[in-house]
Length: 160
Image (cartoon, rainbow, N blue to C red; front, side):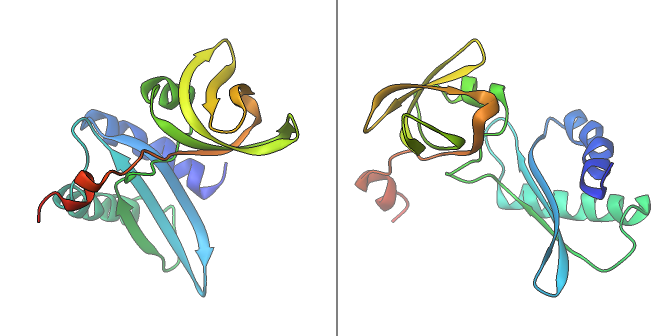
């Protein structure tokens, strides 16, 4: 088991107990150093104060765990508008929302799809692609996927 997998396995109970979803965890070299990145979510969304709180809590926890023995930068963030879709449950939860899906192998000579998540059927994602209409994408064949909700003028002017 690698460091990221070990951290994830140990951190999940702590996060779940607090009602926090671990969307993504990365531990990798970036530039001259190492980065440990937690992407978190919860019902109602993760705000800046949540990120600050969990940065402190997770930082103390990682330091005390002894799992990382060299210097690293800790980042804690929300998934944002273009949330990555990693699990079957993510696709089910965000049915009806636009997404960008990239596959390992071509489907009808195409690897990049952009369209509305319709549903999960068996082990396949059914996507209403902007170019090709309904496309059946095996979940196991998805290299990466993220939400791509449309932003309207009203969305960009809120809060002004």
